[in-house]
Picture (cartoon, rainbow, N blue to C red):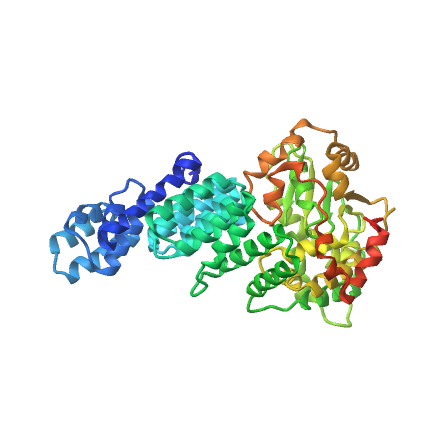
Length: 549
């Protein structure tokens, strides 16, 4: 099954498959007829289903359709098409073709339960074969990336582009994936191909602007973006266009204008359930909840990695994950199981059930156990930085827990969070305005440092600036806290990062290793930090020793 989502060739070879789009010049029917003749079954099935849905089937495609009728989606469409057109010989041939069967439903349930990304990708491809819909292919690409990084997702995303040449969103997804992977030569090749074919001009303009910025031609990049037609632009591409605009404006020193571009980006990120106050309200309710002590915690080798988003946690987690004795869990729904139990059990003003903390803790560890799959690991680290806002609640459920807590200059953290295109959720909603970004940082640090302090023995604080300037020394301090020795594999974390799914916007920099250096972009936006809403950050600047830096 693993072969199903393994890259069919090199990444460069996969990109060259985009030349197939050139056949669109023959017209849609001939394009899909040519695609139907491909050995790639995903492309062939996608193509014949389009032809059958449109009711236009070239005579040369009949044999291919009958052969592909072993797939449920093709057989249903083909039978109806041939019967409606009184083509009984082909209708009978379709009926005589044995269906490829699979106990897909049960397999999917097992794969979801085991968080088996390889199997999930395989099943989603089978769902595509069964339904003919492209949604499962998109899910398969996401699962494939989770199983082995962007290279595993690449063939499926190229397939999506070829099956849906009228939908620019798939090519935008391809471009964004290559951008996040720092694969700019491949991104340039994508733009070359689609430009020569004369398709997807808006997508090409956005990513040509990215390439122009990397080549030191930010002004030229902005000119390219001025040519982008915003009418009917897919939302993901519109967000990318605003993000690239802001980055190019930064390169030109136009930080006021860049701020405006980030504001436009963030407005697009707000989902239908946008509610930045919900996260704080629930954290306060948990902090005030009365819980009975849960008893001893035998999981002394289980740690949490906290701090705040954009504080260096992704860099540190990727480094530690390369140690053979350490398994890390990156932003999995481990604590979501606890949150769900709280929401079901919480009655304002009333204590929680006596065994709540014990049950919550059991739920949490169950989710970690379900995802643990690293042979030889005996130290486990759960990374979810924003969970620091629930410090008091954590102490009630895990009174013996030990933590790794990342610290970075508060101004840089807040600015970086505001600039990032986070997927919307109850926590990330707070980063769509500068004011809310300041507020949630202050709230989170206040919650943490009223529960712990900088000298708490159960916490190992990690400084971002030390991590990037003296990587081995700072990581060794963490390893000593975990009770394990240095291993040379840690130094190669950037290579492993390229094989992992992008779960946070930090991956583009993490894949560059520690060459990124200390970043103090906040100085360029000093006008923001003179605002009244930034004043709550000052006490954290002082506490962490960043005054004057």
